[in-house]
Image (cartoon, rainbow, N blue to C red; front, side, top):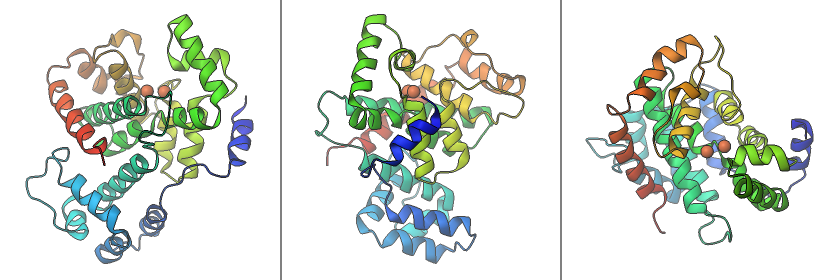
Length: 282
Ligand SMILES: [Fe+2]
Ligand SMILES: [Fe+2]
């Protein structure tokens, strides 16, 4: 199915998950460049549950901050608007789409563990290669497979057919859905991230995480997510020869994929810390 047709179907679904109003307000404020420490923290603090969770996140082992942040405005001062905005998205997405114990026949905890590991691996690769900001790569990694959850809930037949094909052919989800399903998780993910008004580079990375071909115009964001995804799916090992990157990306990224010892152990610790925070039992 063409993207347009898929999006027309999604447009008709009335109860698709949304991000909380706080995020949209924050986005508007930051885009309008009217952001001040006071008005940004006030918007977040209107939601005490969200504020508490943001503070716990930034003070968790995952962020590894030396001093503790005591308030949202303190967190913004230490980490900047963008990091706090991204923390709002991460916490909200995990809250909205955690479906704890509600989804039968879908390993939701496994799904989020994979997404978090791609987020952390992508962040490390982005930072170490200096191609793109680590937090963009974290966000894109966290959301890269979001279409799978939506597919499971709203397109159950297509999802079931895909999983059956995957098991029969012992292939990846993406290859299986390409053969048997009329809709795919990449198209759905692109739609959802656009609907949530996330930045274009994040939408592009979600949309490209399986089929992107690097070019001279590539920033490296999609490649960091692709490499993080491949590492996560392959037990943290991969053959760099399987990936063809444009020269400027290859120079920065491929050495990290060939020689993982210098960064992977730290990434694995970070994955544990992030899973402990995001997947904690409520
Ligand atoms: Fe995927
Ligand atoms: Fe994935």
